[in-house]
Amino acid sequence: MSVLPEVRDQSDSYSLLHLIQGAVITQAISVAARLGIADVLADGPLSAQDIAARVGSDTTATHRVLRALAGHGVFAVRPDGRYEHTPLSDKLREDAPDSMRGFALLMNHPTLWEEWGHLYDTVETGEANLPKLRGMGALDFFHANPGYARVFFQAFGGLSASETAPILAAYDFSRFGTVVDVIAGRGNLLAGILQQAPDVKGVLYDSEIATVDSPALFEGAGVADRLTIEHGGYLGKLPSGGDAYIFKHIIHDFSEADAVTALRNAREAIAPGGKLLVVEYVIPENNEKHLGKTIDLWLMLMLGAQERTRAEYTELLAKAGFELTRVVPTSAPISVIEGIPV
Picture 1 (tube, rainbow, N blue to C red):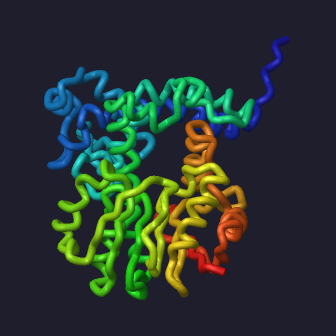
Picture 2: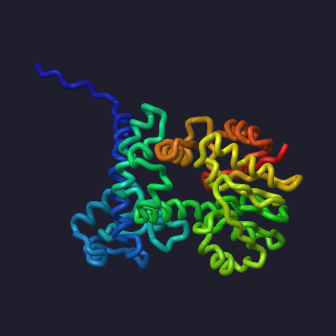
Picture 3: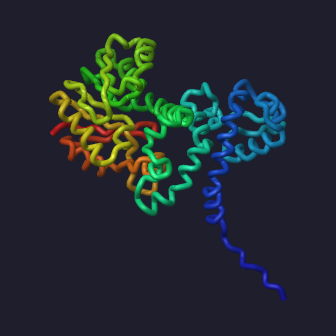
C-alpha cells in the first residue's frame, strides 16, 4: 500500500526561494538596462522581435528575460503579446527622472559581484573585506580602476540626485544666511537649495578635482552669484561662519573616530545659533524593510563603516559637541538629522 506524502503549507518556503533568487532578477534587470530596452519602449509597445531587432539581441532570449521581469512588475506583456512599460520599467530609461539605470548597470558589474562574494568573510571577522581583497582602500581602488569607478559613482550619483527634491520639500533652508555643503561633489543639493531660497548664500567645500564641473552647474542653475567654492579634504578645517553645515552621505562613510572629527570641525566653524544637518538614512529600530539596512551592508563590506539609528546619531552628535534636536523624514528613504551646538 502506497503512502502519499503529507501535504504541507509550503508558502513560506517558496517566499524565501523568491528572495534567494533575487540575484537572478538583478541580472535580468541589468541586462535589460544594458541593452537599452526601456529606451526603445519609450514611444510605445513593441513585440519581442521588434525589441530585439532594435537593441541587437536574440528574439527568443529577449522574450524570456522580459517575461520573467514582467512577473515582478518590470515591463508588462499585453494581450497581443507586445511588451510595454510599467512605472518600474520606465525608471530604467536613461533619460527618466530619477532613473535607476545606472544602479542596474552597477549591479551587473563583475567587479561588484566579486566583492559581494566575500560578505561571509566580513561577517565572520567584523572587518571590511575590500581592502584585503584589493590590497588597498576603496578610494585608492577607484583611482586605480577608473572604468569601474565611473560606473560606481554614476550609480550612486543618480541615487543621490533622486533625493534632492524630497529633501527640499521636507526641510526649509530659507531661514539660513549661509549654507556650507561639506564634501558635496558637484553640488547638486546646494544648487537646489539656492534656487529654492533666493536670499541664501552657499559655500561648496570639497577637493579641487571633485568640484571641477561645479561652476557650470551653478551657472546653469542661475545661482552662481551667491556661491563660493572652497577646497579642502575630508577631515580638513571647514569654512567658518556658516549658519548651516550639511553633511550628505558623508558621515556614514567614516569610522566612528573620523565621523567625530569631521563633526567637531563643523562645531568649530559654525556660527552662533547655527544648525548641523546630517543627511543620511536613519535605520528604523524594527523589522521594517528599509533601503538603509541594505546600504549598511555595502558600508560594512567596503569601508568598515555604518548607517545608524536615531539613538546612535544622538550619541555621535553629542561626542562632537552637538545636541540632536529632531529627525526630519522625507518622501525618500533619507532623513535630515538636525543638531545644534552645545
